[in-house]
Amino acid sequence: MKKKMAVLAAVLLAIGLTACGNNEGQAASDTAQTIQAESSQETETANNTEEEAQQVVTSETASNTNDESADDTSSEETGSSKENSGVLVVYFSATGTTKGVAEKIAGITDADTYEIKAAQEYTDADLNWNDSNSRSTKEQNDSAARPEIGSDAVSLDGYTTIYIGYPIWWGEEPRIMDTFVESYSFDGITMIPFCTSSSSGIGRSGQNLADNAGSGTWIDGKRFGAGASEDEIRSWIDGMQ
Image 1 (spheres, rainbow, N blue to C red):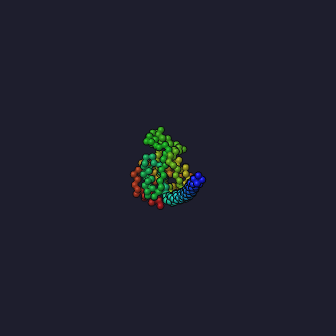
Image 2: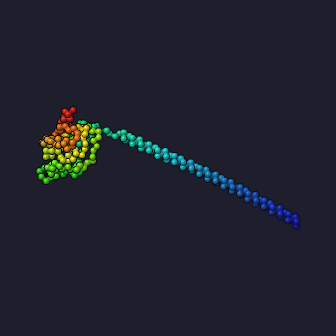
Image 3: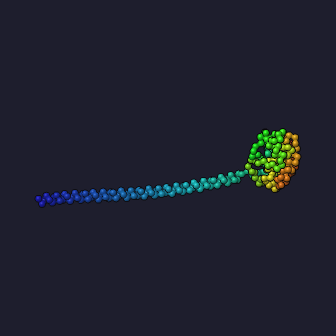
């Protein structure tokens, strides 16, 4: 009986030792897996941090590049701005006749142009000189009339010569021309009037403009017909030099 008990105790002891060994092995395995997982997580975190840092650097580099490109573009645009030739052709043309002459003058002199447009456009009825109640008749009969200009203001900086053109209405300049000359300073600028008409001469229109402007050096102007040729206009321009 004692012998059997000794054998049974030995068997139980062996089983206990085996179970303990298995538990320790499993614990060791779990510990190793935990360490490996933590190491992988740390590596991944480090990689992510490095990747984010790289993205920030890349983003900042791209932003700086865009800013520099914008600055370069701005500089190029500023540098390519057209400088005026010092000559400007200003004109008012209700029917297009004066515009034709103005464009020829601009082409000959390599000048910039500025069109005076009425805020309220003139209709055919407005221009009917046979109607004593037409808009243009009433304006021309009132030397104080100042029709509003609808075109944007023009800068006269850098201009030394201005050709100023208009049709002759009732023997004088249209009152909108008086509106224009009273709105600007022409100090240091040579002012050259020109007009268009079917028969009337330039009359006192140039002197009227000079008086109303109160600034600028005004010289005698020239009247042109609707069919004025470029050669005729060039001859006039060359004769003033």
